Image (spheres, rainbow, N blue to C red):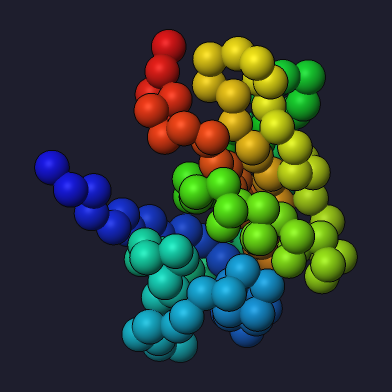
Length: 139
């Protein structure tokens, strides 16, 4: 079965800042919009930012490879050249990372390049890549 684009909806507290971040920083194109939500194309996937009231900003984390990974997060698995290009673009823009771009689990099953950052509403995003896509679900 061919992989189809996923859809994820997430809360944001400022549509203007959200649009600026996803469009200018991450390079997303904008789809349908309203005064309460915006559709973005994130590497071929449909993500929708929904305006809501601010909530508790406490972020639960779990230790993974010596780092504190935000438990609630989502993102995209890119091919390695796309991941490297995105990491370089974000670093050149001076983006503050939750976890700086690096290779996790070096030499182990599941070795992957990863980076975490927050959008303007505090949503945690992970972008990762594997040297071999067969390792994505390897145990």
